[in-house]
Length: 189
Image (cartoon, rainbow, N blue to C red; front, side, top):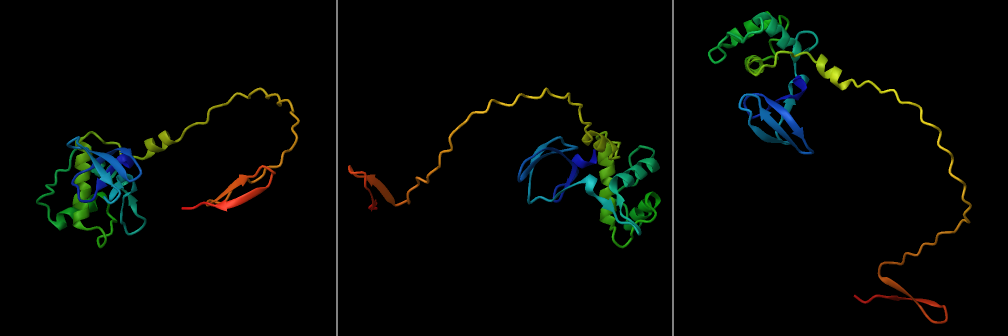
């Protein structure tokens, strides 16, 4: 589900991808339900592609969101994000992800992560696991009944005819004279 949810730089909130073209995407705000275009110059990133820095391997966003959901028991975050200090944000994330990298994960990143969780919860998106996406992408091959062997077409004997290049240079015109002689003359511009 997170693959179709986007964060667009310079635009607040989260967006759902509606359709995609060569240099353009039509996105819809999850909160306002307003559709707008997002061009190639707009930096849009899927939430399914985001991970959080840890001291070991990076943690995919869906695991962090599931940890927040477990901590909050499926409810919205009670921490007031507008008044929270950087220490408050770090201590909250520490309860959810104890080994996050404190040097590379900034308080603004934590605030954004927590606000994304609240937005997703407010619009009813509570399943963050990528398992559904993998199941949808996995298409089972259909069994195909063997076709009857088609009869070979009857052989037609054709005499090979050599192909001549009849193209003439762009500015030249070929004309035939009555005695079968050919001459070339140049077109006047």
